[in-house]
Image 1 (cartoon, rainbow, N blue to C red):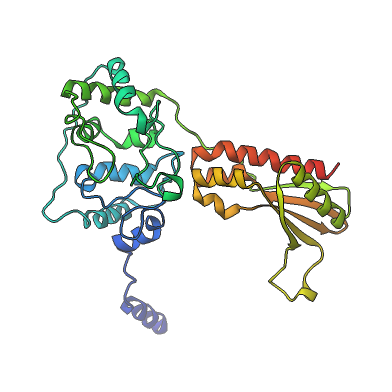
Image 2: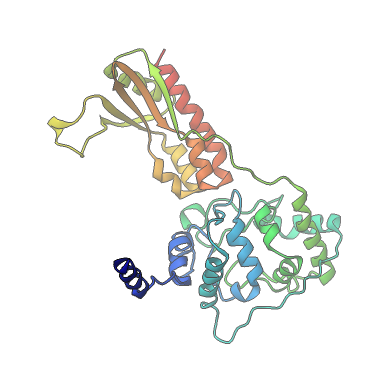
Length: 344
């Protein structure tokens, strides 16, 4: 009993590990997209002098908690309220000295959405899209014009509409946002009534269903081959070339992991590429490069030969980018077509 008490006392005397602060939590969860200094990357720049003072904590909490479905920004449901508060505290440290967060009324804006639709088409659609779907691509310069410091956000996004109040949208329209192409529409000749109408139209996007991720939970595609491993590898090459792909190389799955004499002869990878397709996909989201060039692995196990590949639709869902849905669906069909043709 005495020993047990001594052990307990010794444990109580140990210093507790400090909970991660806002800077550490930001580095762990946010910096990979928004940059270590908040100046942007795949995600939008957060350290703009005109951004942080213009948004209140409620907006930032809702944005972190719910993300932007289909627009790269994921939902961080796993973070606690205290952790989100700490991250926001770190963001606030980037505000210009002496600046304060603008106080916004909770009063909803009353406007004519039908009239606002016309004004939106004339003034906003060129950047935010005809239906408020936002600019194309991600924030990195490879996927946007280099003269744009930020991709125009999707205003019809359920995450944005849940986070942004009417007054925040109105204030942004009235004041613009320095450091971005977003100008003050008061200075562009719109009246406050015009702006109220645009806000009412933007709020009407909430009636839409919004983007929903696919439900294909299979991370890998596979298909049996009736041929030997060597015959299947050649059949995959022929089928890929028939689909307008160029064969990059074919190698053992264990190439580079073991000495050549020790490599398994029961697993080979065929790499192939359509450069036009890759360029189009990379322009939408450079993260596509993680699973390019295309590849099919041919494996022999216990006398059965199988062809396997990643499921592009599954990866599209993980990337949370609706613009990838179409090319990933196309890639999914191409993988299936190549494997089906190789197994005929």
